[in-house]
Image 1 (spheres, rainbow, N blue to C red):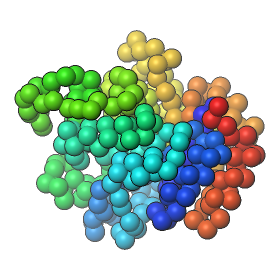
Image 2 (cartoon, rainbow, N blue to C red):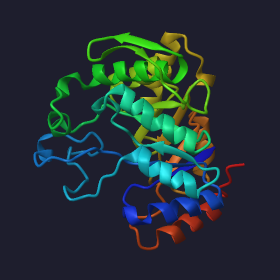
Image 3 (tube, rainbow, N blue to C red):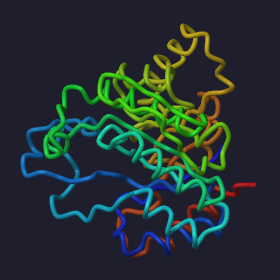
Length: 285
């Protein structure tokens, strides 16, 4: 079982030191949350990760360009993989998104994981003059374009949202054929996106019990598509694990990676990280 750790809830001033320690003690991956902006009408958008739809965010939260921040972390770490949880790829032109993650992959020596999602905050799209209702189609087209930019010598594209000709994109990412794409989201549209366009799926926070319906739906879609499960990576956010004995149960469900959050606040987070690593015998090797 691969075990990653999220930077969510930590003060950004702590991210680099936390990442260095997570790398040192053997966590497989590090995941950074991402938004471009928050807007004052945030309460009008339903957040899918809470029972009542209330977003667990503050309008004055500090937001950063996630691939840029991870590139800084890459310089300070050696082996830990660096992922976004999740990046709103459809908010950017796909050439810009592809360049950001291509740069991260090169600077990290091939450690980027491109976690993507369509998003839930309408105001975030509207602030950029984009129609929130098209976010799914926009994301799908962006992912198709990015994969071509990462793998083809010259790209012509004519689609619903983007059109260009004769684009050369160098350098290519280190990972072949490209950095792994993992789709986030709990809707059927998100699960279908994961199966059709991505290399895996990453969940919202779940328990062993609550994730089972989603895994059943995902496995059904994989079967219907004829896609080999062995080439598809399932990552589950498990922020409330009950103990290391759970790991075998997650593996039995077919989960390849857990993202954990062994702290509740910035104060004491590194000590909590070390305690978790010892208890769960975290070792990326």
